[in-house]
Image 1: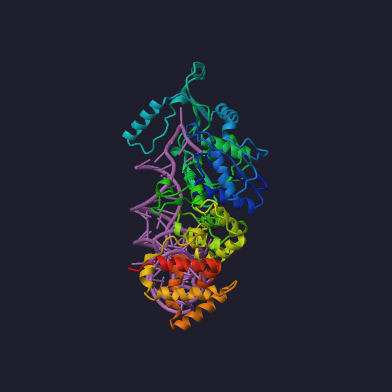
Image 2: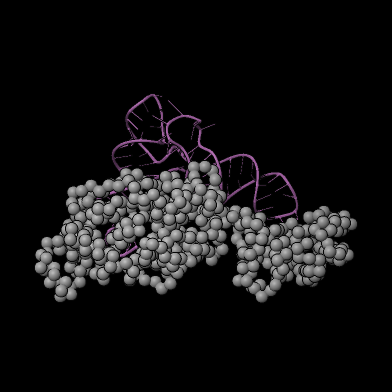
Length: 487
RNA sequence: GGCGCGUUCGUCUAGUGGCUUAGGACGCUGCCCUCUCAAGGCAGAGAUCACGGGUUCGAAUCCCGUACGCGCUACCA
């Protein structure tokens, strides 16, 4: 056994933001660790200097923290297997590459990019089944190597893949997988800038950090034979592999920026709740085998298992995400929603206005079943925050009759007689007036709604009146009568 | 091109040889509830389980082949 306690890692490269596919990978690692009382480690794979992005690591960590996927070891919190930035472990990789060099399992290569390019073109022209490096530098004598290095010739270190081998491993998700070593290229291990490639770095680090399960996206499946080879050549025990199905665009290609939002930050900024995003992404490629679709994080931990992960890619379906968001929002308590709403107000056009908690709580109670996002608690019912700025034209045409102004005037008069009216008081007054006028409820209720809210949809009429309050209601009725001019 | 992986309603999926006239969810349609919009309830449309061969008394489920899709094929991760 490698270790009693499972240790897993999420190893993103800092390219600027956290991809939702990355979030799913992080989540599965996290769930697996928590479920099995293991450790969840964050490691930054920053070995490509040309792709260095300022602030990317901070973004990554912030996104993970936002989602509440707290890691046990990582860049900003440390741990006993650090450093957790690969760029700070260069000497380690070099040392291990040297070991391979000594064992004859790796070799220096001085080929120029031009020769490599020409080689590839030549191989393609000859229609060779697969294009790979021709081991040209394997035959250079030790003296010559020493000389080239001494004179400052740039070099890389390549893995010396033995031909005619069968490389096999068992993937937790996909079962038995095998490759022929003839199809595996002599992969560069150390680049000419001295940095390791992913292949070397991830194997060395996973071993040194005692990673037991490598849970990552399917795009890595094809390079797993290289990794397996490295474990064997170092004489290390291999971790278990689990390759997760890809997240897909609607056209079934790998989820990409070109076809919509892919950054976790984008979804956060659009107002998605972290609970909903996590819940949604958990269901992409995994299910517990029952009909449950609504989950909180702790339930996911409870039910998660790698052997219920699917093999085929999953389309990222926004409609279902929206539904889950509404579902999670409705399940939240009003006081929880109050905090979120106040935060949203502070970012809205009403940021300078004051609304008592008690008032907002009423708004929430009346609206929570009707919205999908916290910000809808403002945008779908602005009339709770300011008088109607305009009146829905279609509703005017449909409900504003010549006799309406008089009827509403009568209602306003009746309302003005009330002191501290409750919802029921409004209703009683309303019934009284409609009886006196001899008109059906619906004949006045729609114009009333229009006058008070400017809209034709919303919470129950009497809730609306109660929340807005007597004086304001009367004021709005008067304003409406003055301003609504049917065509 | 090579190698690898995959293929159940539009989408996410259940299904591991008979319980399946293939179940659920999102979305869609209709009805109910109702002052509107939602929520909720009910109903409906929607999958010859990619295709073709086998194995078996019996296959979405096992085997083989084909097609299609996707991934990888870098001194990117």
